Length: 587
Image (tube, rainbow, N blue to C red; front, side):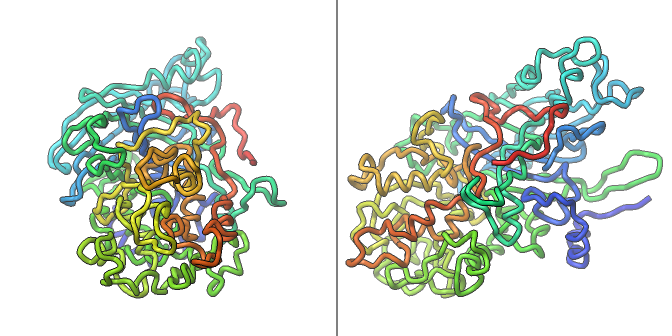
């Protein structure tokens, strides 16, 4: 019999980091982002999505995915939710306090209906049959109310005989009928779904982890990019919640004073926790005891994968976002920026040549790692009345003379972006004055100083059939607001398509890898008027220069999912069927 305290393993981790990294699976994934959690896939948060429901805009849909790289043909013990895991979705709707304002907890139980067979499904019976209970807390987890019990998790999509055959299988009309039947309504009004689905994330992991050797441009390169998640499934927990239930005062979205009403901002993160001690015996099932310990979390996509260094990844997973100020330095000088800087390692990674951070923006400001950025303006009259004023958030956004990206990358991940100068589009700003008021285009400011996916629920939904709909999210909205005559005539607040896209929430379609790489490359700075080095005030005709064009034209190689999305809740697509599975799709 052997016992291991999970938290003790966290403390002992540095001794074993090298060995564990060498022993990892051949399929390295951005999902398997930390050494310990890579060995515990049932508790591994893979992705989080938060968006206004496109077919029901009075609601917000939250999708928390778990269990990476599920091979659809991976039987006979197919992938399932864990029975000794607390899966939780955490919501903040006000900046005060360190605890959740709303928490949803999902726990799962397992039944084997026919233990005489090695098949997962046979003669109308199912093994590894999962059911769930959903609880809700409105006081930071002090008390819980069960809002749904006996929830059904659809089986894995094994094949036509298992799912559809009435003689030897379940006799369902098709797999989609099982998904539809599993959608439930909680006693408090939320729509719920838990089950296997197509993994909606898309990324060229082989390029990403070869020191940023992305393969942009799709088939135009000799070595074409591959979507490492293509044809793989994951397990999802999806909730559709009325906006009035998420808004801090119970207001419906029709009560918003504008499409950027700050009262409608929420921050969302998801986690998984396990009991502290696991006891393994020779003859009995594992026994879990002790306090619950958080072993995984996710807010903004790719945070732990590409910002937090390997020596702190497991510690990051154990922390509540309320404690995230300790990680601020990694956002103020992101490692990826070193590969977009010719004075560092930029020349060694040609795939990122299009992304070159401003080193002489407006011939004055250097945003390369450890340089001053806007530090020279700290405490000056130039920043008075802006978000950079010490009386506002200047001590966070301009903390010292060696944290240049605290002014853009840090707020995107840790506070959200306020509708305050200088965080408005350069449209309408005097030439060469990025600190002036411009055209509003984002306000998802919730200054908790923690990694969360923030959404302003008042921002209108962009129809998925709108010709202007773009997987580039806020970057696409910014381009329209800067260059399109419908939106750049003045500084009035307008509903610009894709203002509801990442990083204002995250839609299933959003290409977060490309967006985040462009952001590290300085595109957010450029959008507010801190243009690229090849623009000279009073000399260059337009700030839409070659460098800016290079950044906007960049993509990370894989720009869309390998299948469609559903038009109705839970929006994620049905899982790939094992009987038809092909390992890899190329784009």
